[in-house]
Amino acid sequence: MKRGTLLIALFLLAVSGLMLHYRIHNFMVADRLHPGSYLFDGTKFMASLLPAIDALVVTALFMSRRTAPFGYLLNGLLVIFGTILMAHFSIAEMTAKSIPLQAMLLKSTLPDIGICWGDFFIGKALYDLYMKGTP
Image (tube, rainbow, N blue to C red; front, side, top):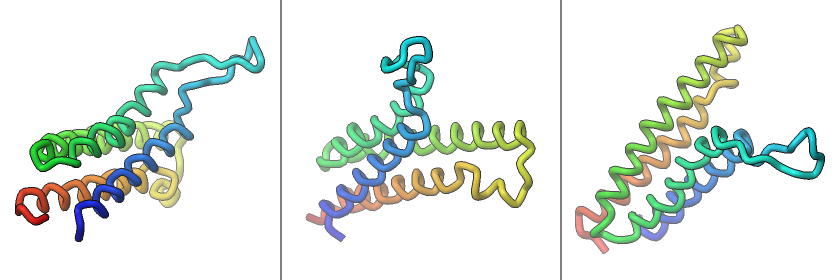
């Protein structure tokens, strides 16, 4: 597989994750006291920061053979953090709302975690291509 194709796939997965995060954790919240204006919510912004780093920085690092190991490392760290944080908040919400066990899989962040790991394995394939020295 060509590196360009993997780079596009890596970028598209990261941007899709960022868009999902922004839709769920919109950090520009409507101000109830002043209709038509918005307030910045820093806690929700942090939820969108990691996918933004993935989309911009990780993709940029994978564009060069010299910086690909750093992209691989950062991509792996983001996947680990994302998996832990999404699983933690999902489990906490599920137990707080007493959601039945059969609905937990579909209403949890498990599909999002799967997207996150798919992004990681595309990054691994890119890293392997760079390290083998194929064009």
